[in-house]
Length: 149
Image 1 (tube, rainbow, N blue to C red):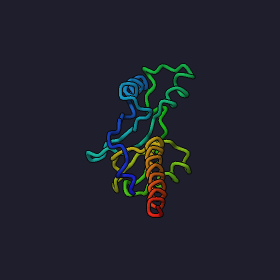
Image 2: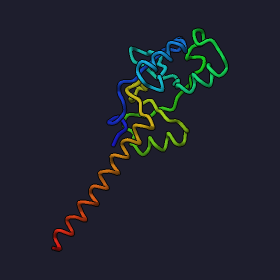
Image 3: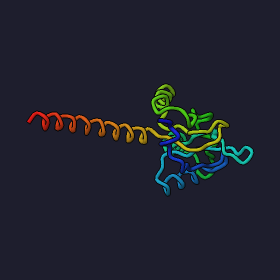
Image 4: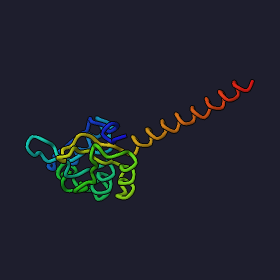
């Protein structure tokens, strides 16, 4: 299964010059923990950074910086790891593990943003798949018992 099939295509985006305070309000109002920082190229949005709620806490709140002055461009993770929409789920998990990241923007062949996938999304998918396998085992056992009686 390609990651493009399961990624969240409703991605919250910001520009580098968005203040950290604006970013925090956006995260709060949409109940998300990350924003993709984009640069517009030929009408398409390309990810150039990622800023998380943890970045806000560690880089701004803990150091007592002024959130109304500091921008996401100042604290974002530049050049975030991205994954092509055609990449498989397992390969995406490997990339996230290798890069030690919980979220990965999903891009098309030209590098334009089409979605985002988070660790939580993958855990939900895998839990669902494991549940299906568990159901298969139960049904198989029942079928065998029914056929022998």
